[in-house]
Amino acid sequence: MIFIAADKTKLGRVYNNGSATFINTESQKLIVTCRHVYEEYERLKDRDSAVALAITGSGHSRPFVISDAIVVSRGQREIDLITLRLPDPSSVERAGKRYFLGYCWPPKRTSKGEGVLVTGFPGEHRIIANHKFTAVMDSLSLQVSSSSEKHFCMADDIEDDPRFVTKILKDIPDLKTLGGMSGAPVWRWDMRETITCPALAGFVYESSVDGINSTVFAHHSDFIESDGSIRAMP
Image 1 (cartoon, rainbow, N blue to C red):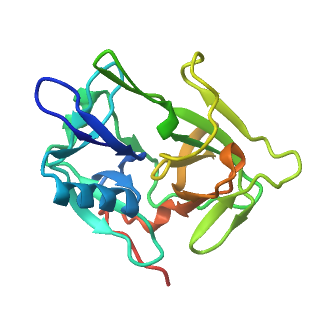
Image 2 (spheres, rainbow, N blue to C red; image 1 turned 45 degrees about the vertical axis):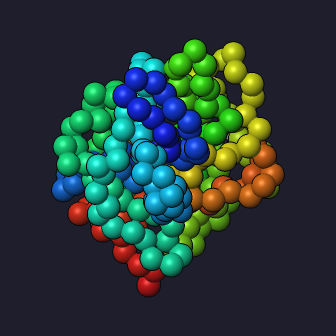
């Protein structure tokens, strides 16, 4: 998810970026990101009406504008999440996106010691060159170090913690910071009958300032109801 100033003929300035998750609860097709990411876009839009909200797409050189997204729900106080819905949810397919359809909603929570995978779009792997925009996805293999009612944490302080970073493009520099990963999905694995299935554990909303070894915080995905509303803390 990026904030751009663009006209119809050329890519303009990219102000900032975050990550987003496309989910299908079977009741709603939603875009989930962090509330602070979307509110930064709103502040920029208030100052400059030319600022647009956009997503990147597979195999496309231009961002796909989604400024017509409708806010379904904003998390309150401690829950830094927001859900959006497009007037035509299927339009994201033109940008090469698909909604993740979980086999049950809400998903099961993750627990301490479980291995998870974070996939998102860090800002330092955002490339603008030759009038083309490329946002490179990175995946981080982490381990849950603690879990509470509000969130779960992935700290790099567990013995033999398997913290690996996978780059989709091998010829770009190694990832040094996690800026831009807010809103990224966190995946766990469930056994369904005899098949291992990806399940949505949560959404990254914050990290410490320790570079690639930062502690990563994620809200549980079950804060989002099947209709897109975001429940409050008990």
